[in-house]
Image (cartoon, rainbow, N blue to C red; front, top):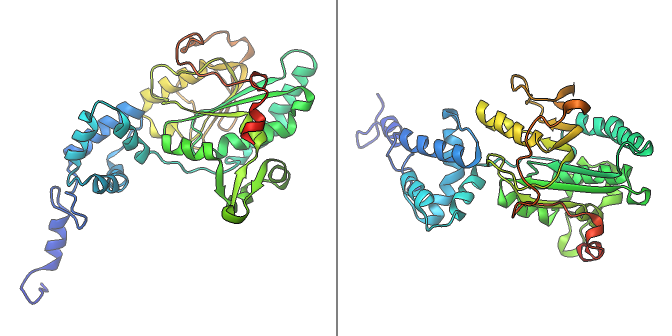
Length: 340
């Protein structure tokens, strides 16, 4: 066995440094199985996110920077701070923010946007022309991340269903991560993301940065006007959301939940879906085995049958204090001017 000049086996030292309880180069004690189990349980209670044992490196990587910022040397110390805290839930929300994955892009899941453009929108137009529905369209992007999804929806809907033709578009965009929502509200991205947007939408709805904003692009006033951002935790028992929706997107979220959480989330979401309303899931998700009262009309695309009735109770009462309402365009005629 090869040893250094002091007679110490460096490979044994490396292995010892990885044992639970040993301090790393950052000065933070390596997380123990017990500590990880505490965070697994806490994060699941707070967000519904199920961290498997294989996600331990992810947890350590996401939280270590916060431990260093707070001057803490162990995950136990951080857990105590999060759980006991100072009576506020700010640190708990920050922890959940660290765990959330906010990977997204404009017009992600292209087949779903093609289905929206070639089937759903023409269907809505035909129904409106025959007076089977109003020209008001409400959409809920329930895991909107940094805003690319709801603004993609806004661009497509406003392009095909313009206000000049009497259409009224309302998009509610919600997420668990406050950090992601702040970015979404700012609606500014690197200009490289323009490649994800078709030329007609880019020209009609996006602004190109100049001078100090060179290299950036921003959502234009038309799509910002119809989009409202709010924080909603899909794991909560009650969603503070008002009214029913023509289309709900819950994409790449269910993959982080266990079976029970998935079923509860879908029950709550479907309680907000109109008869003949559509539900979009992520490419790796399905409602198989959940007994949901919807029909599959394509991969990860579902519709609630017209004769479904009220399959689920309405979980949030519109008169309940704190219920969110997506503002209609007519509510504030001056809003477009101020948001531009």
